[in-house]
Length: 131
Image (tube, rainbow, N blue to C red; front, side, top):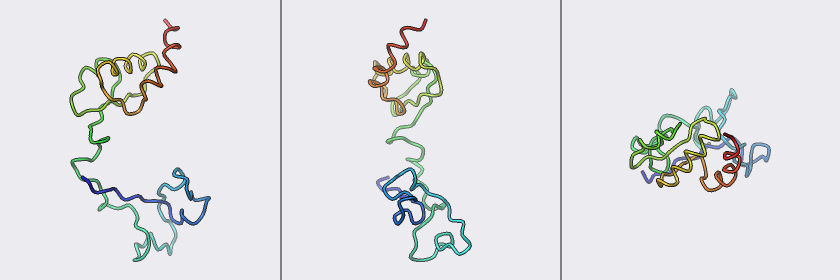
């Protein structure tokens, strides 16, 4: 579990700014396609490419910070949350999202894809004006 996951970056990304030197979004892995590509051929002395052996251990696979993610679409889904789970809010409207975030903050449930305080500060006034 303590083993760190290998970072696979785009070929020659450390050499050229256009390939993302210091820019994470451009450095993400792209498969080598060249006929004589040394990385594609897995030659010794060249960077590794993603393959079966680099999979995460089964006990931490799919978890977020060691917690099991659970999709939440309404307030009743929050009631079903158990210990060791973290909420992931699905694709829903603002009004429902405000209600879910407020209830989660009261219950002490962590939400991964929304920062509770900032979200409520930004949208709580807009949510009150509608019906």
